[in-house]
Length: 202
Image (cartoon, rainbow, N blue to C red; front, side, top):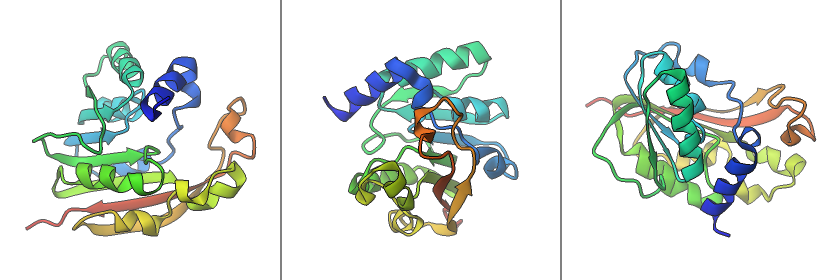
């Protein structure tokens, strides 16, 4: 089974246990003027729908066909119009440029993350913001992962080309998962590697 097939199956079986409840996006975009946004690894479109509801022009990219199907259906029900594409973000090609790029809980393991970050970061406009959040490497032990599968803020910063880093730290999020979610079996407190950067103007 390929990784794409794995994620398609996961979204078909129980999309609610794939999607990560986001606790950060509202505080991130509250001070930003609306514009164009790219949601990398958009999954079922939760963040794309949130941004669209506040006037952002959103493009969501995910390599799971079933996730994009669910995202398009959710957008129709919500009455918003983000654009969704099925593509591998590491090789996705577009001439569009974005004021905001989100990569939230969508980084591949280890060294596979760098091509995704670099390929999508090139679409950031001057003055634009990229925001990356993913499980910090310190979560490997309680969750039973190999530490090489996860990232810390310093490792993520090294993958960002020619951008001015504004924030790189670990945020602790309590009650990350609802009680019926198996991902909270070892506790629902999560440590999130958070990086926020901007493309300089001029």
